[in-house]
Image 1 (cartoon, protein in one colour):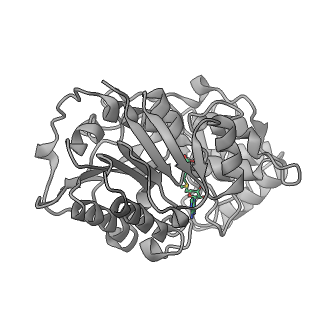
Image 2 (image 1 turned 45 degrees about the horizontal axis):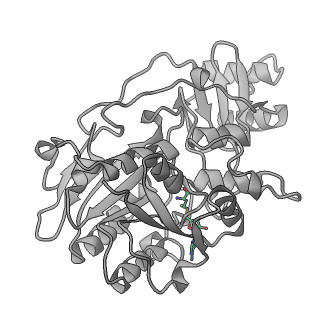
Length: 384
Ligand SMILES: C[S@@+](CC[C@H](N)C(=O)[O-])C[C@H]1O[C@@H](n2cnc3c(N)ncnc32)[C@H](O)[C@@H]1O
């Protein structure tokens, strides 16, 4: 079967493009506004056309797949929470404007955003996207997928929405939907955000908490990892962060800024789609004989909380209250097996500041954690 062609909007540093390429799909056009991200795309994909601004595009080229992880600043918990009408997240409207302007519509549309968009304003952004897809004849399905279930020790829950004119988007997205996540205890590592400590810490057993791009309100910063057996506290380096998203180490080197160092690279990596998740979706799209996935019995007509759903023109939407968030052959990898190659010890200043905030906060305390941190800081006891 001939390969499928892809046009990409909001391309960032190319998480979708890298994953889709590994699955045998061929991207012919990318669109990205941010100069640092554009530098990475030019370096990594020198032969793919790159245009600058989705708002200035008149149409997309003929293609089989249109893909876009649209800006999340207005939809994420850390961000402005203005919703799908916000300046940035509202840019998704251009996906539909471009579909309308394109005589031969792509058979498949893939969109991605933060899982929190299912909660914010009762899921208004997701409803907007699915109703716009259905209005153009697309059947749709969506599902929250967690990078952790794709062989990387990085908790990153994102919603992936697939629309198809012909074919069943559920057969691409729902493999493994009946599988529950493995419980691993006791954890050998705990990921957390040393920059937090007042209202939460991003506590993540056996994985790194979601790498963040910065909401526009905050500066992206690396998380920390506590090795419980040794009491070591580390922060991953930028090349570890790239690998934690499934990119090769050094993927964003072209965005290094002599004045600001790697700060911009953290933002780009924190905004990206994890490559193995994109590859898995790409394989589903590329397969000429997608295996039937049994999932219909999971759907209910209403569910206030859910993490997967499907519907389409003339169809009653169905919701899955607790869908598995990994593929049928999900595999978890520990932080230890993954290995951090350019991590640094968490600075005493950062550790002390965090410990002070944590102990003063109303959060339920993990005393082993607090003692280990105090020890890391050279304190004889945990501060009150
Ligand atoms: C969530 S990120 C996408 C990340 C991407 N999927 C990746 O793997 O790196 C959204 C991207 O949309 C870009 N963007 C924002 N406004 C844009 C516009 N008007 N035209 C094109 N891209 C835009 C941002 O610069 C950002 O890189």
